[in-house]
Length: 127
Image 1 (cartoon, rainbow, N blue to C red):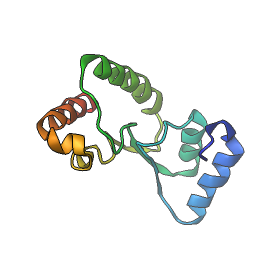
Image 2 (cartoon, rainbow, N blue to C red):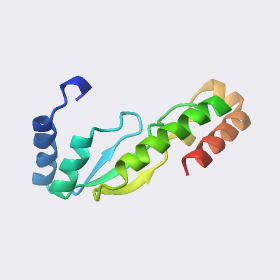
Image 3 (spheres, rainbow, N blue to C red):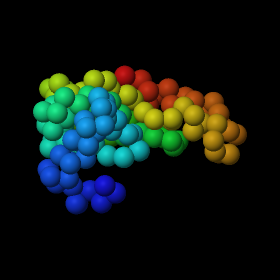
Image 4 (cartoon, rainbow, N blue to C red):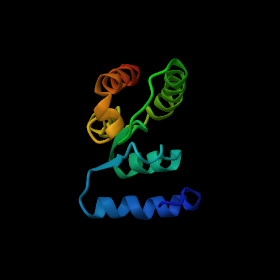
């Protein structure tokens, strides 16, 4: 749902059960979205659905200054321990199409070295 405030266990269960009924075995939490609630992951565990978990970086140019990277580190130090005990987590993905974004925007096309270095610094933090 595009309105996170409307999420509830019943809606999650209906959605995830429909994935199971359609013979899906993996759900992706996209990096351009949000980290899901504990309810989502518990239901995936219960229903046997695997989760492809992106970190929340997608389709954009990100800074690599120390302040931003400190925020990234705090985010990862919170999210990974919160989620790692769920058997449904099948893989962690650092980002979605961030390296591709370097070629999408005029700013990054003209400053490719800068944005490649920024991507590399972010990627090393996520690893």
